[in-house]
Length: 274
Length: 280
Image 1 (cartoon, chains in turn brown, blue):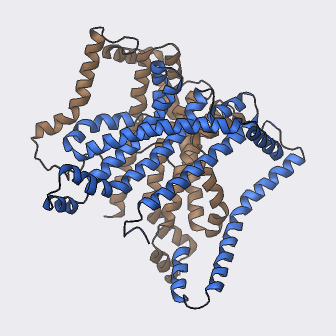
Image 2 (spheres, chains in turn blue, green; image 1 turned 60 degrees about the vertical axis):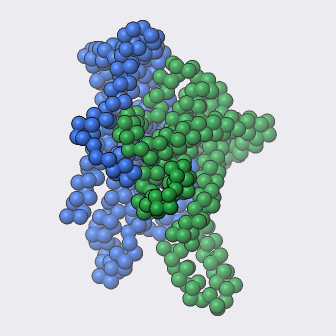
Image 3 (spheres, chains in turn green, brown; image 1 turned 180 degrees about the vertical axis):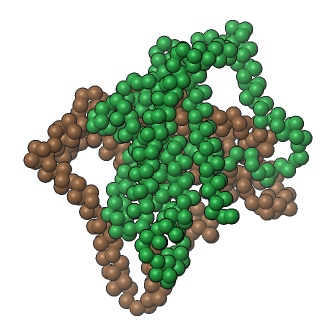
């Protein structure tokens, strides 16, 4: 079950099996920009010549100006920070619990059998279905939001950690038996390094899930400083420039998270296979 | 691991006593199942006892019989069913539109490197924005009626379907394509007899992710802006502090999720039965 798709697995155009046409370097760099650039130009033209309703399609410079103004004295910067803080606190709790429980379940067949069915059922309940319950239990304020974000980060890290430990090749376990490894040696020498790539996949997914949940929590629960709150404001006051600015920031944070997680993953792989 | 062991032993003792073996396996399965029931069963019992002793404030967790009562009542007066049907219809419409568009678009950019280069950056950038982030903007454009739900649900299904379809179509083994060239296949028959069948597993991954996303998005959208559906039922229960209603709707959400999960697994094994490396 996945709430969002991690789009960075690889750029779609990484391999070119179907058309091996050589391209001039200029074309290669310009081509990806062609559509975004022409869309932006079209947008600007439509807005400039009054073809489109400016309430729906504000001119680009207006969006940019709104962004600058908001950052300077509208508090958009502090809203962004508030969202990020909420997101990261929830992520740390949720992912920490997910990795810990995933390791325990992965190692102990007994715990796996005890908790497996419960977790299977838990996975089937759509994440957002927890929102009403969480808001009644923890309130719609900061606690409720962080709990919801933590829950979002918990699911993918738990599943991936569990699978990571489960996928350690059987002969590694046998080797550990032959070498009469203690329980602790087994965990540190074999299990954790063996499961790390998948744990990282889980953390990466958890980071993205948590960000989605942050937006959702801010839209669904009590209004508080944060990007979601600003989007609510933009919707109610019909301020498309503010909304577009928020979209831009939401996407930007997603991109940064993906880049950071991807870089860490690559570094980790290099460390594992020198 | 357990599967490997049973497979090895069944090969070994295939001609011995099948009945004894089956019995042993059944017992082991039952043992495993009952282990899995300990924790949920224990929690349930604790819930019942705490409710009987009156230690559980109703705002935190209403007694289990109240929840059961609410469920049976809302089944009888049809609210649970009609709201579930509404939700399912929305998912079907949104997912259908999003997945269809995703299949076409994904195939197109999978086949053509030029199209891929052109569309890739824009698509990746747009897909980085959490789906719910689009909601306030879409509301301004189309209002909060059915259109909103279809668009947002469709978009959440569109992304994974495009990514996976494109990948599947692009990564068709080169040798298959060469065979097609040798046999002088037309473009169309290359597409239908080589590319599509070979992309099926990948496409299916995309569809599965897409429908999971759709269901998730549906619940969120119904919580935010809706007057019927399971999400609405939950939001309503939350406003009235009727936890039993919230819990009943959650159970329905979980059951539908389980149902979708099971159906997909069934279809997937059906579809992939012809692949020698996967069927066993």
